[in-house]
Image (cartoon, rainbow, N blue to C red; front, side):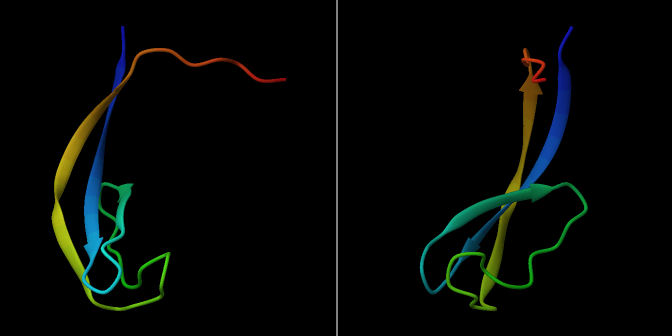
Length: 55
């Protein structure tokens, strides 16, 4: 059985960086260029199908 998480997609107008944040989060600045010109581009659902346990 896989877990599903929802991520929000954002895009910077100045450097065209696309980045994802957990659902419910809001972007205020671009992590790449620190611009505050951010556009909400939508959301996506991601299925976590496997993970490795790290010691």
